[in-house]
Image (cartoon, rainbow, N blue to C red; front, top):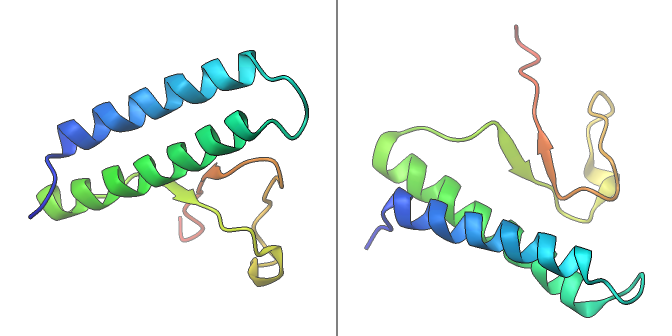
Length: 92
C-alpha cells in the first residue's frame, strides 16, 4: 500500500518543525533529542520522496546523505553537519 504524498509531506513538515524545536532547546552538543529529531527528518524525507515517486514518477532535488564519507564522489562538496544536500545536476 502506497502512502499519499500529501500525508508524507505533512509528516516531513512536522519532523522539520520538531527538529527546529529540538535544536532551539538543545542542552549540549550531543543532545539526544536533537539527534533523534535529525534522524526523524531523514526518515520522513525518504518516505515523502518515495511516495512522490510512486504517485507521480517524480523526486525532489534532495538526497539523504549517509555517514560514510569515504564513498563520496570527489566532485561533490558535502558538509559533514548536514544530512540533506541540494544536488546540482552536473549534466547541464
